[in-house]
Amino acid sequence: YTYHADQKGRFGDHFDTRTKSGRPFIIPRGKWLCIEMYMKLNTPGKHDGTLKLWVDDELVGERTGIRFRNLASMKIDNLFVNAYFGGTWTSPRSQHVYYDDIVMAKKYIGPCAKTRTGGSLSPPPGWERK
Image (cartoon, rainbow, N blue to C red):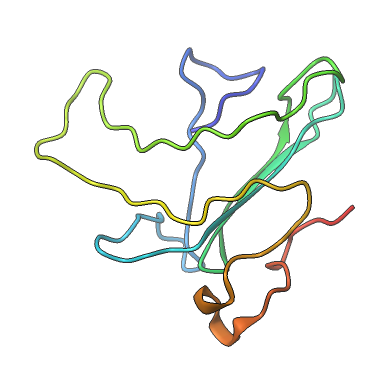
């Protein structure tokens, strides 16, 4: 889910993720994935922010028209990675998530070549450059 200035609830809004076939994207068990995310902050006072999410070069989520901030001085200054299972329910068993090669950048840098089909390091379709 996504935290933003106009979220309906206390805990953010859900970010719908779907495959090309329209099925909900579910992280497969026992498989390494290349996950890339693009975030463009909104112009202060406007609803023009963007979030995009790719998994193994497939766009699985896109949300536009988001208002993240009201002040130009508010910037992205950190990254929090979390696999959360809790709140009012608990996991029925122990679960593990492994992360590797996490990068935060101001411009597109691409994943390790070994994770890409064909080894291309060009941005996935829809990635905006400035």
